[in-house]
Amino acid sequence: MKKSSRCGLLFQELVSIIGRLRSPSGCPWDKARTKADILNYFLEEVYEAVEAIKGRNQEAAKEELGDVLMEVVFLARFYEEAGQFSLTDVLEGINRKMKERHPHVFGEKKAYTSQEITEYWLKHKQMEKRRQSILDGLPASAPALIYAYLLGQRAASQGFDWPEALAALKKVKEETRELEESLKKKHHQQIAEELGDAFFSLVNVCRLTGVNPEIVLRQANKKFEKRFRLLERELKKDGKKMGECSMEELDRIWERIKKENRGRRKAGKSSLRNKSLRR
Image 1 (cartoon, rainbow, N blue to C red):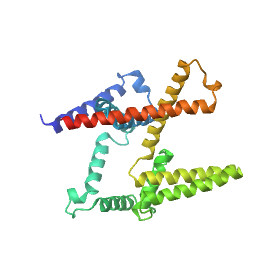
Image 2 (image 1 turned 90 degrees about the vertical axis):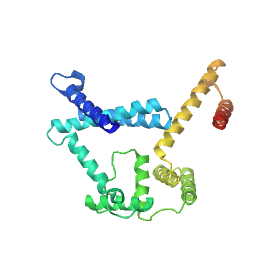
Image 3 (image 1 turned 45 degrees about the vertical axis):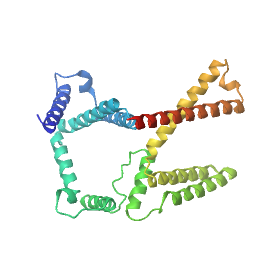
Image 4 (image 1 turned 180 degrees about the horizontal axis):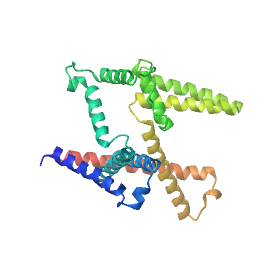
């Protein structure tokens, strides 16, 4: 059996499984779920999938992508039960959309550059959905960092952008100077506004360097959490409590932990390079 045929059969099996779970003779827990419940699980699974992919864990990525797919099928089931649309309608819609928005692949249009494809995609979406502004249609429920990223992306598609990341970084420095002035004046409302401007400027630096701000912030959170736990462990080993230590002492231990972590990372990279050379 061809892989594509097997994939189709397995997908149909998943649809049938969800249908049975939601049927009168199905699972009491699944039957009691609401769209809001599954939406929360869906977001959780998406973040777990991102974590697995970024961690380069092949088995975890396979499992988490399956979980995301299951939640998509589950959400579509609610609409089918309400007689609004089916999963077949969803698949037909996305297949048609992908073909229409790639005329250089599925049609007779000439090949585009990557930039031209992006511009065509956005223009086609705007016409198709009868949008008045290039900013229409952005997901209002998206995390603020992602929303800022998408805003910058849409504006950039119309040529409203910095020429490079370094130019955007100058804006970050300008915003931090304004923030510093606000902090000196202790003007709370102005401080909040300048903090927002600084965040937005940093997101543009991320975008221009091809980095997703949501993902890098999550990585920074994980790094801080790991180091903080090591700090707690070090203090416990010495029979000390954090609240009883001076900031200078805590800083010394923190810097030592950072240095040791960097050393281990460099050693790991060197080991990987050596393995690659031996192959």
